[in-house]
Image (cartoon, rainbow, N blue to C red; front, side, top):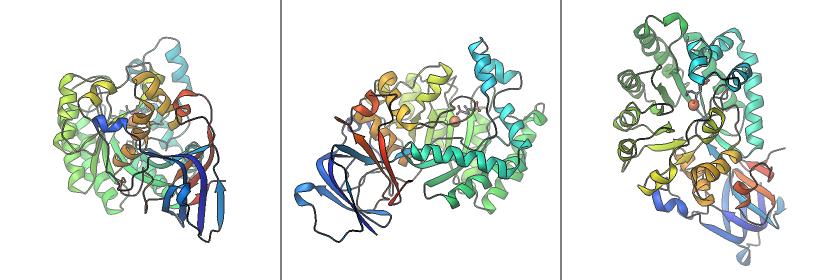
Length: 412
Ligand code: NIG
Ligand code: FE
C-alpha cells in the first residue's frame, strides 16, 4: 500500500538523519520543508521532499494537502489513562477551597482512585480506558506511555498492566507500559510502609517481569508519598529486572528526586513544577529527559516548569499530558503545546520539538517516532488549512486537525 501526500503547505520536523533528542538552543530550530510531498509505504515514511521533485510512482492513494501543515504525531510520554470512574467531586471540593494535599490526606486523591479501580472489573476498566485512548488518538497522539499505580495491590496493579497490554495488542498506536506501584502507600499498609515496599519488590515486580508487563518503573518521589531513599531502592529493584526508571519528582517539593533519577540513569524525570537552581544543574550533561506537564499545572493551579531557565542551561524538555483522574483529566497534546507556549514561554518551535522528538526519547522510541525521517512510523497529523504552524499554539481552543494517520492508516 503506497500513499502520496501532495502540495503540503509546510512539512514540520523534517530530519533526514534522525536525532535522539534536541537540547538547549537546538530546541528553537524546527526543520521544515515548504510545498512538500511525502510518501507512505505500508506503515513507514518512505520518502519526502519538495514538490518540485515529486516522484512519478504508482500509488494506491493520493491525499492533496493544499494549504495544510503535516507534522509527526504527538508523542505523549506520561499518562495514567487506565483508571476507573472519575474524581469530579474532588474537583468541586478544590473549587470550594480544599487543596489537593488536604483531599489526599482525607483518603481522597490516589487512594480514592485505587478504591474505585479495585472495585471495578478488568473488562470494565478496559472499556473505560479504550474510550480515552481513542480520544487521544483523534487528538493527534501517535505514541503513548501508560502507567499503573491505581491498583496498589498485587491483583490491582497486575490488572492495570494487563489492561495496558490488551490496549497495546488491540490498537496500532505505540504503547509503552510503566509500573507505578509506588504511587502512594495504600490504606492497608498505612502503618507499615516497609511492608508495602516489600510487597512491590517481592511480589509485584517478579510477576511483572516474568509476564513482561512493563517497560519502565516509576515512583512518586514526594513529601507524603515516597522518600528519596525508598525511590532509590525501588528504582534499583526495577533496573535489576530490566525496567528503566521514569519518575515523578518535584511536583510540590524539591527533595532530591532529580538527583536520585540522574544517579540511576532514569530515562526521564517528570513534573518539575518546583525547581531549584541545583535541580536544573543536576540535569546538565545527562541522558535523563526532563518532562514538563503543563496541563497539570493548569488544572491544579500550581507553578509551571521553568522552561526558559532550563533551556538556557542547555537542557532538553519534553512535554506530556499526565492524563489522569486527579491532577489532569485531559489528554489533549494540542492544549499542552499551546499552554507551554502561553504559560512557560516556550516558542512554537521549542514546544513542537518537545512534544514530538523529545517525547519519543522519553519513551525510548526516538529511533522510530517523533520526526519525519525515512523508515520511521508513518504517524502523522494533517491540519486543516491554516496560515502557519503558529496557529497550533495560537488558536489554543480550536481543533485544527483534519486527518490523523497512524502506522500508515487513516484514522476513521
Ligand atoms: O502525575 N503526582 C502523582 N500522580 C499523578 C496524579 C495522581 C492523582 O491525583 O490521581 C500525577 O499528577
Ligand atoms: Fe503523572
